[in-house]
Image 1 (tube, protein in one colour):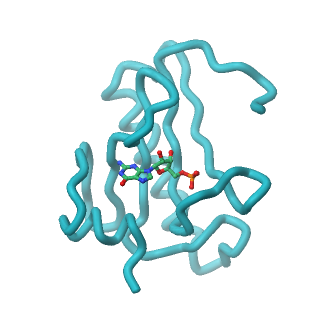
Image 2 (spheres, rainbow, N blue to C red):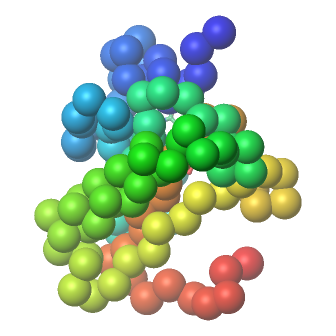
Length: 113
Ligand code: 5GP
């Protein structure tokens, strides 16, 4: 069974894909929580950070590098942005296919809720 994000990557579910390379892709979040809210998603499924292994190290690093590049392209690297991975129920994870939220374009409260 494909995950929601695999279906988006395969263009079976429409989404605004703003970046793509061999390893990952990025989409506009359907329910944005900030003026910029983009999800960076690996093409190979890692279910959640809490289950990641050493084999995932390079891919996880790649996701973060891409998040930084996208933030720079969006003009939020200067003002500041947050990269968030929700892992598991208490964190509010709703899609079991790891993804990095890029949030920016407004001041972000800390600590998060
Ligand atoms: P999580 O709660 O797992 O950390 O994040 C899942 C994110 O995926 C949420 O921010 C939610 O708005 C977003 N999302 C869920 N379904 C879709 C969809 O069909 N398209 C897009 N672009 N985003 C989605």
